[in-house]
Amino acid sequence: MSNNIQDIITNEYQNFKKRIAQLIPKVDEDLILQVLKFQTMKEEWPGSVTLKIKYQKDLDTEFGTKKERLYEKYKMLPSEMDKRTLRFKALGLYLEDIS
Image 1 (cartoon, rainbow, N blue to C red):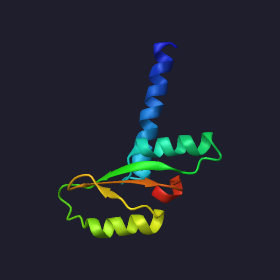
Image 2: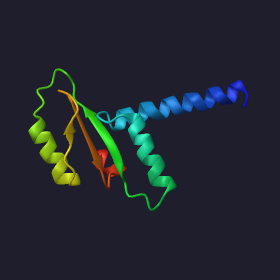
Image 3: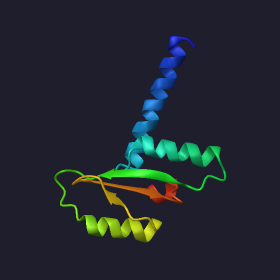
Image 4: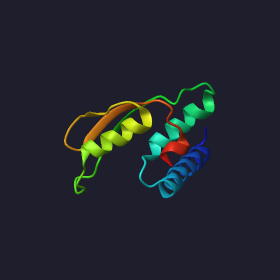
């Protein structure tokens, strides 16, 4: 691949990630790309992902409420990894759920 083609593809990819960040600012662009990849490549994909949700330092995060909401939606109880991070496995997670 010539450098020009590589530069064009890299530039398009970076622009695409920026656009995703504009459209869905609270979700990591790489997560969205991974979910999109699995959703489009495997029709029978059950939407199963393991997520780590890291909350900002300056937010007063009520883990009890966050855990309850995740459990209500995905029927999986998250575990606390540290003071700011929850980890859980989500079944049936698709782009429309995180956008």
